[in-house]
Length: 348
Image 1 (tube, helix red, strand yellow):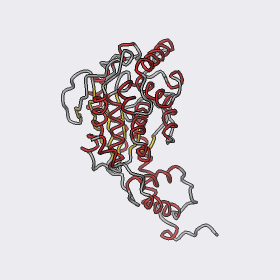
Image 2: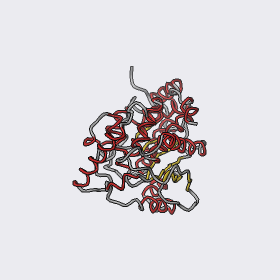
Image 3: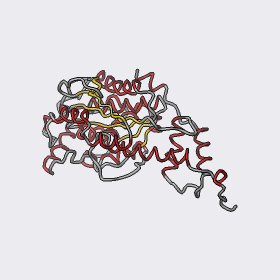
Image 4: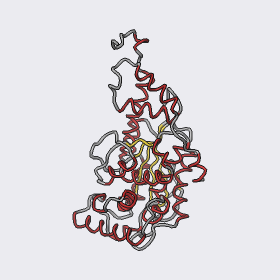
């Protein structure tokens, strides 16, 4: 499935982008005066191959998984919080539920590797790769086969929802900033100290311990920084792999995918290593407070739409990002041209 998916990922549709740019230049405004909104509209036209794309079917995919490295004491919260938050998502009481309702998006919750069994409920997809990863400070977080299975978990979610017009990624998993920091440090070549933040709100002493644990994991596992599957298997997480799969699946279906914060950024790095063309289909919603996030985005070549000092995850930033993407497309589709509005154009 992974190979077949990556084969379908192509360059953006240049003709649609040219036609979108021509229309944008003829709207009743100075050319380029709506800045990033114009760039977004043009990108969405290139992704979808449509001059007048519609984003009326919005989906947030929030993926949960646990991390064996939590036993090293790197988080302020116990792993029991992961399934508890999954139930909160399903009841509609989490931050992502509020912001998804705000933008009119559906939320799908995926159990890709929670360390306990979650009772099947409406809105929950159980596609468990395993009951949490193994402790990466003692050896690989997962096998290569599990890494591929995690990625294909994300691809399969997109396959199940292939009629949607835009996707946002989200995550839940105690310990996942530790895994994400390891991924970002490994792939970008930046120091662990530079990419690692306080995650759920740990103190300085625990942060220093977290950094030491990540350095130990990288030293023990020695991930191949050119091989996304190897990096994922050595120091990743099931939900991070599934996020990479969502990105690859969306790209193969010509669906714009708005990535959330640091954890989604780590997933985006994995997707980018596996298929560099997937970056054309990614839209970075925001820049997280987690310091490694900007480093990950810079490595891929993505520019975030906003910075609101957010670090919650779940897809909250992606939800707000989708609203901006939708606004850009409405400008392209609904704003009058100089000719249709009877407004004089700029003098030659």
